[in-house]
Amino acid sequence: MPDKSPVVIDLKFDRESVVAGLKNAFPGREIIDMALPENAGRDLSGSAYAVVWKPDPALFSRMPDLKVIFSGGAGVDHILTAYELPDVPIVRFVDRSLTDRMSEWVVLQCLMHLRRSLAYARQQKNHEWRELDPQPEACDVTVGVMGLGVLGQDAVRKLRVMGFEVVGWSRSMKSIEGVETFDEAGLDAFLARTDILVGLLPLTEETRGIYNTSLFAKLRQGGALEKPVFLNAGRGGSQVEADIVSALASGILGAVSLDVFEKEPLASESPLWAFENVIITPHAAASSDVRALFRHAERQMTRLEGGEALQHVVDRVAGY
Image 1: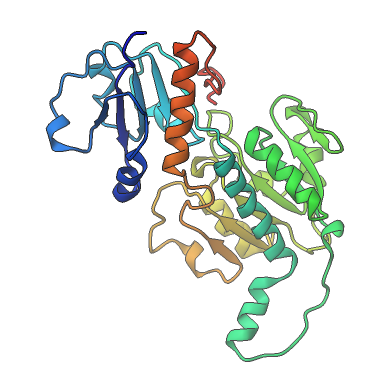
Image 2 (image 1 turned 120 degrees about the horizontal axis):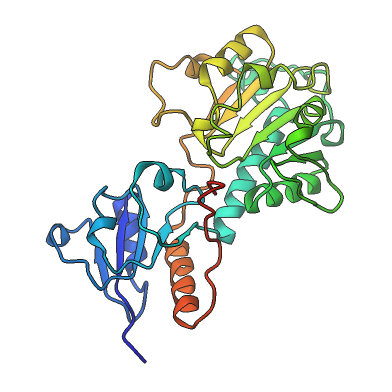
């Protein structure tokens, strides 16, 4: 059996987590960690695999024998738009831990807005004891999920377990048992049904800036939450933050939870920080577990070397 190909690591993650994750990772393979000074000018020929997140722009040109690029996250727009790429497969990160974390964030945010947690937190700060009315149940609220890939479908299932009415939207029609779904032509009908809009779309030319004034105006007004709520944990480039601010100020949106932003980190002067009805998390909804990422990459390498097809390969035309 031929020697296993070396694997090149260029991950702009927390350094301690990468170092810890590399212990016992990729057994039988040489690991070339590009964060180490001794690898800065190293000859990378003979290395077939690269596991990356925001890598050095010259990395791929230094790897003439590259066979597969592994993205360090579920999103791949940073690779597709910022680099001159060789004609090799790009594999996105799909893992139970990442999927579960995303669904936890989505369900948490929906429940916080349903149960008026922000208002109760303000009352607690003011030492005020007062039950708020109305207090709808989950079954009174329709959550619309935009993006029905692995993450979106898992979120749909878990929201239904909590009792929410759930509808789904994707550019092409998807079938999910027990859930009404809409395609591109049915966007307006989908939005008109939606009390809480959950954004889990990949970033493509078609989805860039899709969450804007025009879209927010089509969400259901006067539902169980009185005003619609917007959540986004997909990609920051899919939202227009000036339009979110305007929609909050005008009352078109009743509340917002954001984990992703047009530019990260979110600037300290952003008006979003000042809204009492906005929840901000620092792109932490589904942080990649580095150990799980390395196990995922090793499984795919083993499949390829065993003559099997790679899984979770990115469609470069579709952008995800």
